[in-house]
Image (tube, rainbow, N blue to C red; front, top):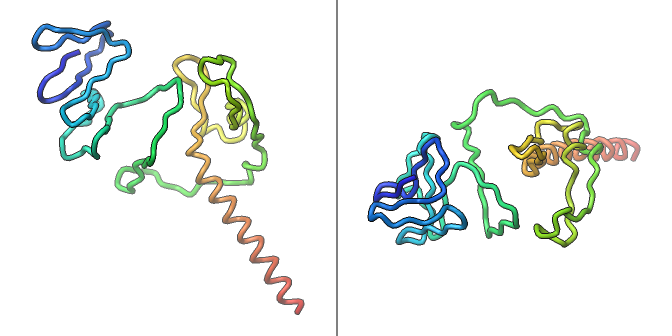
Length: 177
């Protein structure tokens, strides 16, 4: 890995246990904090094709990376997800047949108490996979993960169907009077 004035981070297809800077100084790659003069951490993986440009930043603390794995909570005061139509292809309405009614919300604690010892709520990935497999991924560590944000379109579709049922019932009631 190398650091330069044009990019704080560049990636090569090998793992390196330390970062070597142009002045010969180095640091190990464990628990590093590398901020530029604007207090921005830029991890620009050249393989992704993303070309970092100063005009893309969104303020102090901006991070660009091509994936993030966190073992503890990530706290943010706001988030957005790219959703521009120009970035998408093969756009179709989702098929929905009340699958949400088959989901089993649970409360749980993590086996590894060092991650969190508090109660959590969510779903079991293996159960969601049977109902909505598109929302479950197999991780590099052989554990399954759930795209909770991906549940939102199904929730909206379910609400829309409920609204139609309510409207139909209201029309039936109004016809009787």
